[in-house]
Image (cartoon, helix red, strand yellow):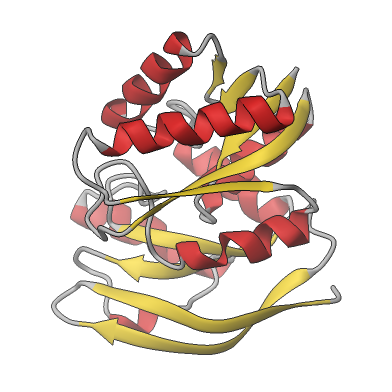
Length: 226
């Protein structure tokens, strides 16, 4: 089956892509670029670098823009899915949804309308096992946004290695947050994956942070040999 992957550049969509590759053919990546940083549906930190990640993965990218208005943004997602179906013959859609019923049900509804199969390899996965597998498989992931206590500015740009994962475990237990950031506590950006031919090198970035809310803005990045 030819699949299109809903792609944000964060760990969940890239891990879901990798899982899909083990069973089916990934024909393209699909990115919706929201002008609204508070989008209900779409990841926004550093979404402008999705093309660079797609190049590293050697996959074509279908990219559309949206104003990011609640519910109306689904029409732009539908437009992206139609383009992916027309250009690359996709028969199904892969998502990185873990717990968000809001996102999962809306994608499933669109897929049903367009007669596309919906594949959610991370849905209600064991979050501990997932994070361990992510690191063990060779994904290199940095924290690109923080949006809750206890994350101070020092977390921005940190790579999620086993030491960081230990700290996330402690934070999850103490503050009742999700280990994966699925509750919106943090966002990520992938700089390397098992299926990347080259890794992403961040050349210039800045941090904007206030009151447990901050983003690492990657202003310049390139591809380098692993």
